[in-house]
Image (cartoon, rainbow, N blue to C red; front, side, top):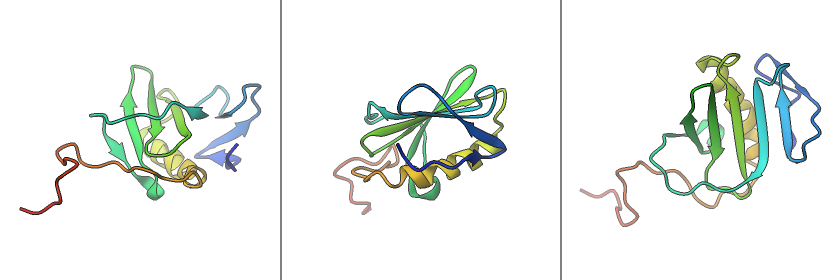
Length: 121
């Protein structure tokens, strides 16, 4: 498992019984799962704090972030009852450092950029 921080935002890491999973907060405000299926091209937004691309998917009660271009992929589940947008950015930045240790093989590109677009007008 990645070398994870003991705290993210205001939440302390706690033990889990699920392999490849780490949790912060009581109840669980942040859940990290390592070894999830890599995500392919998507129209969901991608953000890149600390040099790690994360695909951002909003759900009714939580935000799901999936690392992009790294295998294995890492998933973050952020409970919207405990995580506001400011805290979300801090959590994402804190966990990007450990995820950056996984080799990057692809990166996010703007949705309007095609594979053969060299940026020339």
